[in-house]
Image (cartoon, rainbow, N blue to C red; front, side, top):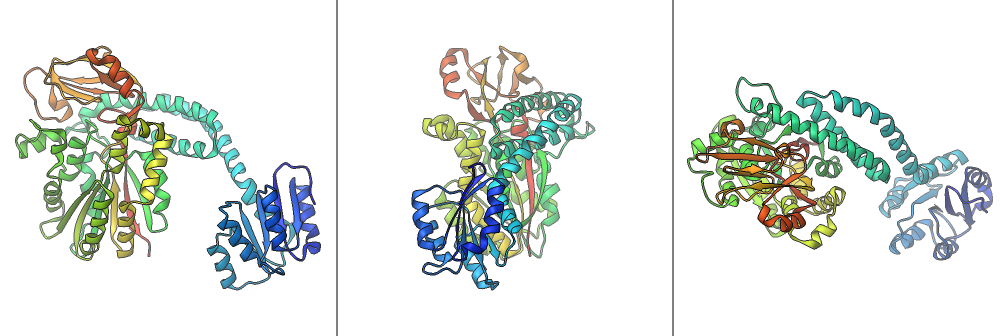
Length: 523
């Protein structure tokens, strides 16, 4: 039984196939091809020979039951949508069908329109959703272009960047590559406009009496964690190093079954690098204030050592915002083995009134490793691939298990990050002396110069950036947009090695506009 192939091929296995003629006629009229068989063995034989887009299975047939046919389909690795059709209304049958990965469940007697509705949802639903996304973005494009041209305040730029992240994820899911190219032009405009805003207003954001700005790294614990710290219960702060907003949003669905999710946005301080931004989260202090409390903090030593005392900063900041009675715990996780060890200790920490901070470094290691490994570069070749790898890690990570444990224990969680990363494609030559820092998105050093001044934000006074002074004639240079710094003596090497890398430390919405997410366990 069939019609012109247009919308999809359907196999229907039911021993009462003659009674289903009105159903199949309607499906054919709507553009589907339908093959009907009377038992499960015939259905499996056809599935071996022919290609189908959906299977309708009667649960009670002579020989193989529909549920057994479903099991064989799944055991052969077939991801084809399967709809169980049965006369039984008992929960046991429904639960068994769902447990064996049926995509839907229909109880007889069923009308032709009901069957058509289920088939349309499973086969045409994705296409219809994709068409709707394309229509809505095409309509919204003109409005977005006007809003970008008119945007002035940080809140407007935050809102625009956040919306473009959602459009990127939606268009990617819909496979709309042409529209993604149009979206990319809007993203470039938002990146440029946001960088102009930061260049104008960052000094005001970081100084008392200046222009009111967004929540910054130094405000994160006071603003978002303080309300959930208690002397009677536990709370958890989870920091995902180098997590972009788009990476968070593909992870979010994995948590929505366990938590009520309340997302806010905040801005990283500058430079958008772990020694500055994460210390600011845990201490509540700008780098110049931290240097005053701990002289010599940023004067020398390897950058990796700048975050050695996060546990002490966290404990001191908790005492400051919540009082001395709250007990604290801190753990940093680099490897899966460390994650497994953490999961053995975490239940004890969450069983008592306390504030616990966990730092997970995988996304940062992946982002840095991509620049050093050709294999990782091939696997994570663009932002979409980087999101996919980050999600694959998170699905199997100790981080997700720790969050599930917190949900089971009724522990409220603040999940955030210290900075993001930006896909860099434009090198800018810098001239520096040997004392200059080695970073690709920012440098400090004496008499720094860049070939293209519009590519960077430059400062000669460290107070403009709330950084500790580094000596006479020191300049501070931070890359804007997607630029990165190269030396003229190593121009070709750095161009080939770091072009198309995800880097951080500079000024861009991808690095600075970050999620601060309150996760409240569901009852």
